[in-house]
Length: 280
Length: 280
Image 1 (cartoon, each protein chain N blue to C red):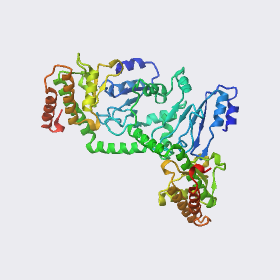
Image 2 (cartoon, each protein chain N blue to C red):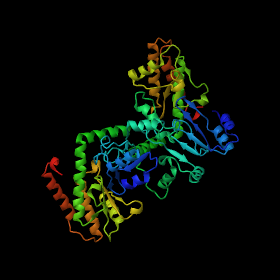
Image 3 (tube, helix red, strand yellow):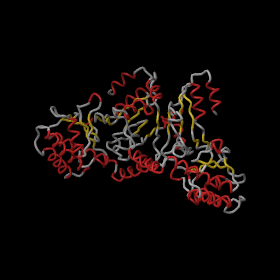
Image 4 (spheres, helix red, strand yellow):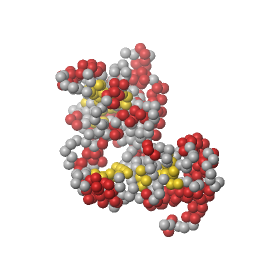
């Protein structure tokens, strides 16, 4: 649903929240938050944003974008172990939760007792997954060491390099509009005549490179290449392009030999000549 | 509620499940499963047993005791990192779940999609907490290396040694009936005239020994000493008794100096003379 659909569907009804996935890994689409915020305002609804696959990889500004509930994962661009879901809610949400007349169906997902845990009372609530918490702390320290803006820029540059290589091989991107592309996951359309599953299998078996396939209705129609957090590195972009070229060539796909890695190398050489701050 | 209460409360009503906490850490009480199984049978209900604090420390036999749903934690006697809850359900429960007419309120707690994940289809469900899974695997390997029966016996012996020491200091146990005592957590009644919170504080600050206090209505009325998994060791029993004696003496509690550790040592020396298999 685009924001206009949400507006229409919500008109004249008591809509409590509008939710969106910021970066949708299953399609590689990045959704702009602002238009949904506007619709949520018009409907008097809370805005919930899933930033699992985008946080740290793309700009997310919870306060400026007035996201009421924002949650994420630790195992994507933050590059900490999986097993936790960071969440932040604002004062308006706290009020809504405290004013509920019905109990939350799941104790596990009821924030009210957790509020007295993270609040002044420090009331015991659950045994935290201690090693994961330490892992997250270290991962966030590394994120801050690089700087959020530098991290966003790194994700963008490595994806642009990837795209240069993909296009040089004559392949098509799944998302046409650059503004709607996630920086952490890039969707590629498997070319006609190529057994896409065999390509993924070969990448994994021969080069230990794992890329995702399409899910549900997109099965067989999409490759999803993740470059997130500590895996968003030049070396992985180069390796992937070189390995993909071999896999495609093994299936007799016609391409210009070496075109992918050459385009990637050229992209890096050109952008490095310009200080990051001046790159547009 | 004892089983009789459950029977009375359930009579003439459509009771779907009977649940109990096998080892209740907040009181140190171990509940016998069998009487609840009988009541559940009479009521035609499923039996759900929480073995978070008992599994590996006390005998639990899911099949023989006909527990329909059994869940546990990883961070107690299994001694793996916290963050997971092992669960097992039998075929009868699977049928009940699949026959539900209303949807489970929480996607997170809905077992049906997880069944297709752990089943033949291997349908993607969630990103597992990988480091925790590896940690659990290693912890279970250690449990099997010792053997379950040997582990139960170790927990029992170390608790009996602890009890010998506690009683030699003139202190009282919280649970009078030995059959109702958990092996992993031992409840002790703080003696009159002693500031129980100060004792716990001192144990922690001076000896890095942390014991629990009472929760809710038991606040100030209970010490809870955990000896579970890799912490159920002679050295910790001795250290705890020696440290407790100092803390009590510092508050002018009258005791026979050295009585606690002496009783513990004597207990171990005597039981070691007898092969474990012959101990009753």
